[in-house]
Amino acid sequence: MVETTKEPAGTHGRPAGIHGPMYTPGADGYDGERIGFQLLDPHRPALIVGAASADDVRAAVEYAAARRAPVAVQASGHGLAAPTDGLLISTRRMNGVRVDPRARTAWIEAGATWARVIEEAAPHGLAPLSGSFPGVGAISYTLGGGVGLLARRHGFAADHVRRFELVTMDGRPRQVTADRDPDLFWALRGGGGGFGVVTGMEIGLVPVARIYGGALSFDAGRVPDVLDAWRRWTATVPEEMTSAVSMLPYPDLPVLPEPLRGRHVAQIQISYAGPAEEGRSLVEPLRALGPCLRDTLRELPYTESGTVFDEPDQPHGYRSDNRLLRDLDPAALAGLTKAAGPAAPVMCVVGLRHLGGALARPPRTPGAVGHRDAAYSLTVLSPAEPGEEETVRAVHRDALAPFAGQALGRSLNFSYGPLDPDQVRSAFEPGDFRRLTELRARYDPYGLLRANHTIPLAT
Image 1 (spheres, helix red, strand yellow):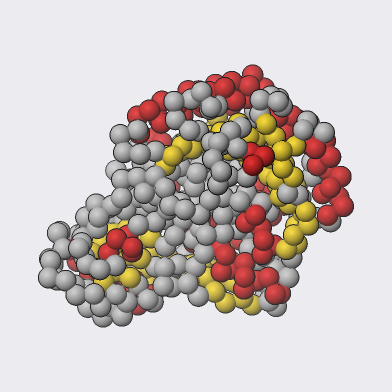
Image 2 (tube, helix red, strand yellow):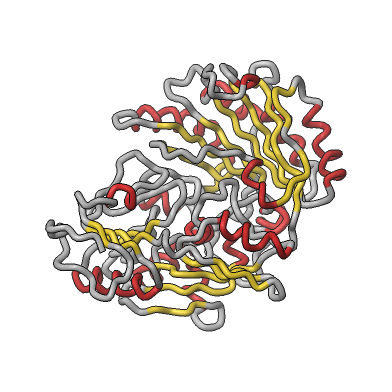
């Protein structure tokens, strides 16, 4: 235990029975424990519990509940929104993964990343429905729905959860399944992290050992219709093909790959869950779009799936916004290239993902994931320093405005930054949102649990 003499603001004493370390402001290790990938507006909790087990989580929740102190949970990942005071439960030490190859399932502890799950499943020829960045926490990703590299073939990650273990805000540990607690099970599968502190979950795995994947990179100035060409191509592919396209201005720096430096680059990311020769044939129309700056497409083991998007793993301050769309308007796409291009006042990274396929089909056991009928998602993201937030918001508003006619709502998982209640509401169907607010009031009546994008309490 890390000893300090400073009393946490808004709390009294320390939780009893904690085996993991605890930190207060100023203690050695405090900053390392509280900082994640998101460096903008870092939070400063009064007390951090480095939970080593589900019992540590239960003791921490009991302690906070008795004092009506706010609680947040952090494992890993891109987004972070914890209270500025109160209690932070860090679950990074709870990173165990157990695979049952015969049942094709994995048990995942609260702090495990997708990289750990992929590593444990791969020797059995199995894979989880993980996302583009393996360093993201598996549970937080899944609570928000989860659109990954196999999404069009196998659906949302949340649809494949069999069981949750969590501690609700009364300090009670629960085993949550569709049979035992159907309402809470429904809410946890896509409704976000505001219903309890999840200490573990059991998921179904899929029989995937290899994919055909990688990226094709084009100069957006020389191939100006790349976004619309990709849109037209997505109408021709089977659901085994999950793809995306990102567009970003690369600075002219020696640390970057030489072919990309100083260019506005459009990267089409490919993940084909089928034979490599079929994947190669399907992407030929994309290769024909124009001169390719870089081609990384190949057959690869799923353990290397993180190379498809090849996202940076360095912490940074950033903000983003997104829309789930029923379609893509070609004129709006042309405007997007300009609005988010090199002339924008701040760097803007555009991300389009092809949805549909299995994502559009309701699962056997219902979940709270919203807007399953969306055909595409559009995200705009910008690095940001303190004081730049309003400039970033204005650029994002301008980039997204032409898509208003096709917008169904937003995705919570791709929203990096604070959302107001109406923005959270837009992630769900109206009836589902009302049900979520009622369940939040039932399981957290004092509104103590602060998720990244918290469902408000029913009034």
